[in-house]
Length: 388
Image (cartoon, rainbow, N blue to C red):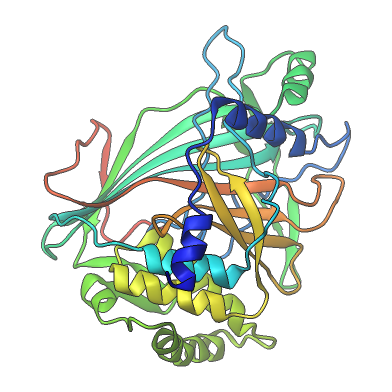
């Protein structure tokens, strides 16, 4: 038995019991920080990510469990834990990633690549007294044929207090179902800009389909580097080869943006997590991505966690230079599939506690499929791809 097989066996426990899942849920509720009344409102949950794996590519989005408030009913609370205790024998990031690379298997064939995800974000209410959880669902259909349109079915699933403590504060505030954020003045590039006012509603919305000419496009490898299915098929199938292929593209992007203090590892980590989470790459390229991630400095294993959909996986984390947050990829090593991608607070502030997850994505289903999407009545045709 080779070393990778041994590690894979170690990381492939049986499904968690109901008691374990419930304990995980309890840990979720315990880890979300309830800022004191009067604290500065943090309205960044849905707007903080740059083009990273959470924001880049066709599906640069984050995920969460379904949470809605129905008329006259108490809010539902989010599904299980954001954090969980690590196993006694914690494995390294390299062991986990190489095991996942070894576990990747061929996927089914079809005429569309289909992905379903849940996206979630924590937002303070306008008064700063409690935290809201906003959730969305997305279903993406990318055709193999360049002459067929790409489709995304998006639905806002609603907003609700994130924890029992937040629910108590929400009820004390009159149980509002609409939250209005006033416009703000911000300074950008030496200029003062006034942002528009915004509104969050508790009730879910009807699904909305967006379609655009595909041309085989599946998003962007970098902001200046579009991807097609043909481009993905040309990606190297070894970690070393993939890194050698990507580094000149990263150098070009750094030059284009005049990045005075570039972090090459951050670029490669973002590209890698975007590829495995958001694009229909082959199992061989997926394996190469994991091998490349394992070679990056600053990538560490942070133990076993339970994602927003209740699935157990191993967390791989990277701290971004100069930014008080961590990027976390959760992997099922037994299958090699990514389960979720999270943004985690790296420091404690008056708005959040170190370790809190404030933006997250869970991949519900992904793979090739025959057929066509079941589009809702509300539809919009676009000339260019929709990035969100």
